[in-house]
Length: 370
Ligand code: ADP
Image 1 (tube, rainbow, N blue to C red):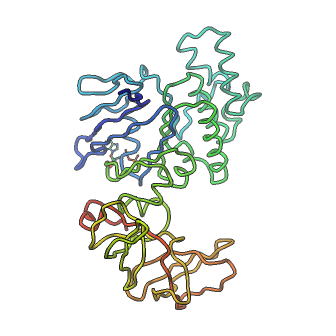
Image 2: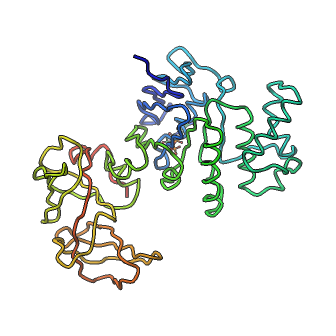
Image 3: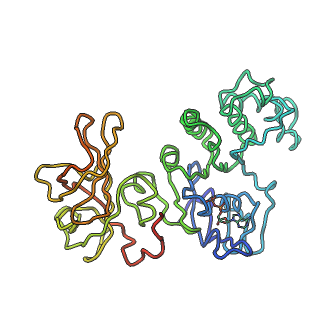
């Protein structure tokens, strides 16, 4: 049997900084296929940058192995230095040389690699063309916008035709409008180059927009790695359910199977049908309810009170408290024409939901974030 070698394999990798109570990266295994765009997502301090630096070679492993294209770069007896890894790096600080022109900055790694002048010029032109900066060759970084500087950094990385490109929060320094535009550029850049990319971000919307798969880290451990849709619809843990997308994770009781592969659950004294993994046992369970899973309905079985209503343009985002569960907040969207005010009574129907497989017994693994 032949299996395709992953472009990048992170195999049970760990890193524990001296003097810290817990490992920053703790037994993480992820394989990334050639041409894939993987986002590493998680809250600040979950170990994303450490993991990226381990792949880049700036950080040694305390356990496990990292291979790129089948070649071990980090392992028990191996540590290939960063400059020999043929990995492209793009960081939030663009690290451009201010005294060099755009073309000079992009050509710099080729000069270091002693690429002949004619080929160098041709590759610089192609790289600048890919990032939409043809004609900017003679400018200096100070004469460019933040987004343009980031594109120069991309071109400089691209010009070396790296097997793998690592990006660490490359949009973090840009304003909101520019971020949206640059998201599209990154997606284009990925399509045009076909390069394998690993992209660190704490912004779930950015990860959703860009990645083919997202790996969510939680306290140094891999909580789940899946396509954006799966992550949203079938979160594996309470932490993933809360971090990716909006909604609520609530306590329920699975009472038995339903005809369509879903299960019956008791939620706030009412019965609902929700999706689950196969073999979901009966009993206490955590249920993830996204805003679109809930609907106001005159005969809905759940009595609730509106706590907050915010007009979002086209719809109103409503936060509601079930009368049977004070303190719990459900989120739902109602039509933009509806007049909804805090304090109003509301009846809700549950149209769908997902039993979080982690289950209530493992809650202690991911303490609720304040
Ligand atoms: P993220 O990129 O997700 O914000 P980091 O990888 O930067 O997370 O950090 C993970 C954990 O490791 C944090 O608790 C952080 O404080 C710690 N850490 C990061 N770098 C160092 C270091 N050089 N020395 C000691 N602890 C570090």
